[in-house]
Image 1 (cartoon, rainbow, N blue to C red):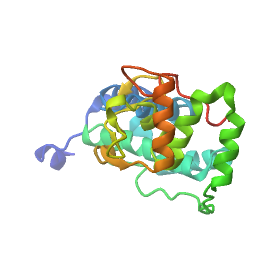
Image 2: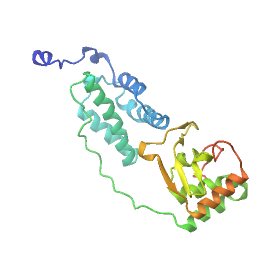
Image 3: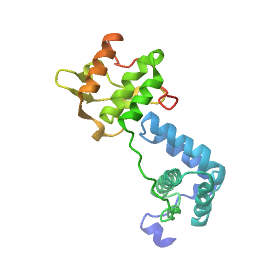
Image 4: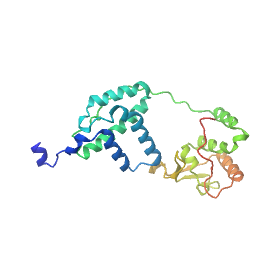
Length: 232
């Protein structure tokens, strides 16, 4: 302890009274997360992490506690969800190390259960046509977003965040500069690399031209709220 003190590496004694939940709430409030990421992190903390570990003091956290939590999560959560939940917990504990509340990150190096990677199923043109037929005339205003999503590979939030000025039908290009978040607010794309220009195939260009003529708007191309593609 004297050696640590001489190196300026003493831990904050108040950590003995701080629970994981208390520290994580302060950590979460300071993160520069996008709205969608903030919502996801909050959900993982409250739904999965706090019920098992939230009331444990930071200084009482052990690798065995984290391993137990991972085992519990694995009984009901998909392997990918377990992985991202552990990553969230590790981020909180790593910040606690940097703040000198704890000496090490007990989530570091904890092994995840083996996950078999499922085969990717790529929808065929017939599958996409079936989805459009299911939408029908009653939901015609949802057809163009589906065509754009399948024809360009844009994320749903990027499709719904398109402004009319982002669509250049003459040059056949879409400029991705913003996205619509799950709470229907408009913000920056997911990452800086998401800011890009995407070529428009002829089928997509025709759908966009028809949609913008049918539903004129000075702002966004798709003015409806996030469409329920899954329900289609």
